Amino acid sequence: MRIALTGGSGKLGRTVLRHLRDQGHLVINLDQAGERGTGFVRIDLRDAGQVLDALTGIDEQAPDGFDAVVHLSAIPAPGLSTNTATFQNNMISTYNVFNAAIKAGITNIVTASSETVLGLPFDTPPPYIPVDEDYPARPESTYSLSKHLEEQMAIELTRWHPELKIIALRFSNVMDEADYAEFETFDADASARKWNLWGYIDGRDGAEAVRLALEHQATGFDRFIIAAADTVMSRDNAELVAEVFPDVPVHGDIAGHGTLLSIDKARRVLGFDPKHTWRR
Image (cartoon, rainbow, N blue to C red; front, side, top):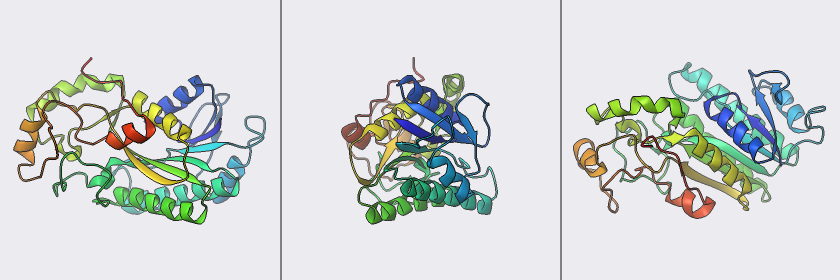
């Protein structure tokens, strides 16, 4: 495929860019920063004209436009900018990308949502554990609110355009292999990482999830939690939940170290099967 990738210079974006190119796809990185001559185009996604111009064709790099869009670009977490700047950047950028893709005739869109829409940082406990996609979004920050509203926008756009597919991937905390050295320190305080039920996602598995979502044959909107198959902790899940969330209902047997951010739907529908873990 010819793929427009926004945010290809970011932490997850770099891995997605490499993985999709390794799979034989033509991928152009649309971002604020990058290196000339590497399939990079500098763009301000808040400018609708620039986005439409890019998605309808980029000179010698992609003169005939694109078959698909992967939208990862965003202010990626709460507290990195003011709430107003975060909301305006993320909402306007995402609308511009979705709208330009539709005008350009692109019907295959994969977008980065966030685990935060599940209710992170779980100062209000989750309704049950493991958490999944079945309960309504519970944004607890302006960043999370923007991600929830981006999903709602995708729902309406796919209703307006029945041929359109938008898949939102609710990525957990993205980790590179170099980050794993810190994990052994997490066991000392069970509450330190309770904010996302001790979850994470290896960037390489995150990139694989993007590829699977691009290849998934469907129309309409869907959302998937994307997390590693295990937690960041050496301690047993049952012990952790009993200590930190003693009153939260538990669905099924959680003993061991399996993820408490359920990836059952991603496994079943997309064929997602995370291979990387900090334990090796």
